[in-house]
Length: 117
Image 1 (cartoon, one colour):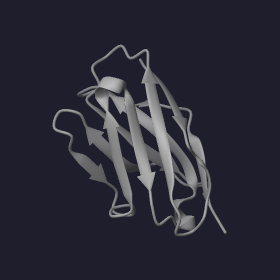
Image 2: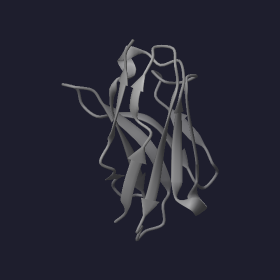
Image 3: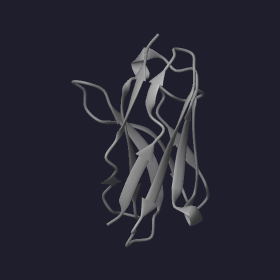
């Protein structure tokens, strides 16, 4: 198990930027990858980005590629999501996620991101 706390959500302007942070604590497993998912109203939760600690590889959904950047420090149990060139379609609750190799995702409580002028 692990306790994940997200921060940094809020109101963003179209074309603007926001940065999300996630801090993990109380982890009882070796983290293999951490990432971000999001869920818009009336829609299913979808993958946004993740980072693999072994080689630092990063992966992105096509919808955010080139606009969002994930980074983190496994030793510090933190992961970040820099979101640039925001659009109203990025409005959603963003969830931090963490998992060991071959295990299920653990989830944070989520942070709301609203993109509106």
